[in-house]
Length: 389
Ligand SMILES: *Cc1c(COP(=O)(O)O)cnc(C)c1O
Image (cartoon, rainbow, N blue to C red; front, side):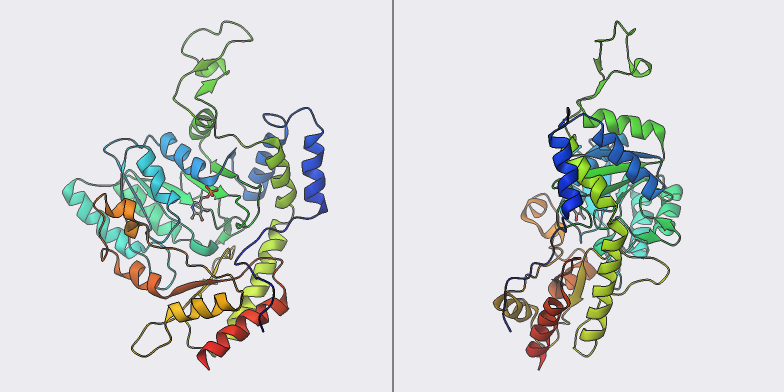
């Protein structure tokens, strides 16, 4: 049953997307033109968000978000160990100390029980975090209400890493409405839910944070007299008031983003159809299938199965090898960040977060993307069934 390679994720680009980018190519502005604010307004309207700052990628958005919240040397940032390294690295960029909170063994998101325990200890030791970064793994929202209550009680700020979760809903609110956080960050990398090639955004309800985010995006330079340290000299005058970066999105990318956004809901709906089909086709196999909380609506960026590792059971490695032999692109999301050599060399040790480490031994991400066909899905299921025969 082998056939052409099935990737674990890929973009869906149509003629409208191509036309939108071509139109910008022939326009006056390839960057710093009108397409970026248009994309930001469209995103704000979709998310019910007040302020959207589009930028070069989600890693940049996380960095700007930490800076806007004034995370600095000596401060602490906590995140989940089961995430892409960028959710933790943003703390290191600011000179902060990074630590992790173990995951919930059912949702694979940061455990609020472990978070509450760790906060109580940190309060006693004087080591409370300044920023906590919950990650909506695979697009399934974290328990934001509890995290936000803990934030108020212990005085930390919250950045949601929603790189997997555009199009998701937490209860009745869209992920990105920032009802329970200071800033929410999205990624528009091609494997994510919608794409701009490379791209990201930081979203907030707080005007002062939004202004800082825009300043960090573009060198810390302002042309707005109300932010200037000195009197405004003239129309040509600008001031650098922070050490910022060039984290801008181009107009080409923004036009692609606006065009993709029009299809976001249909992309996520298609992911749900495919995921439900995996749920039923795989239900007879000795696998742990992903759970979705019926109170929320997942963006379903990833479909993660677990191969329970007990004495005599089929090994996760065998499953990955067999699927790869059949030309099926599988992945593991993620290697726990504290187990990465860079983090281990800086004092993090293996065996610190047992739920995350158990999960890591068993997890496999199956192919899931809007253009995945039902025939391709049957190939994936067929290959898995053969392994467990
Ligand atoms: C993809 C991803 C990022 C980084 O996104 P980029 O846009 O590639 O910088 C950060 N966090 C998580 C959880 C991601 O999946």
